[in-house]
Length: 100
Image (cartoon, rainbow, N blue to C red; front, side, top):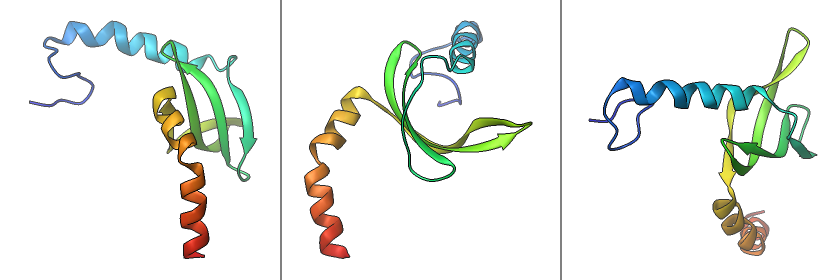
């Protein structure tokens, strides 16, 4: 049965402890983030290292205690998915022009 936080095939709660701690540590360190562009006041495209993998992160941000923090709304594309999207940009542009 599927449970939040577990990968398929894993059993036992001990497997979740170190993985969750590692993810939190790396997500708190934003020193390697590269802001590629700002789409609007609260939306940004970043390239960053997450759990040892490079991802393209398109996300909304919010302000709390005078700090800008990433919100839940967004998507992080691993490099293989980013390359697929990049290769189809011309087709996406044609579809947008056709529906405008």
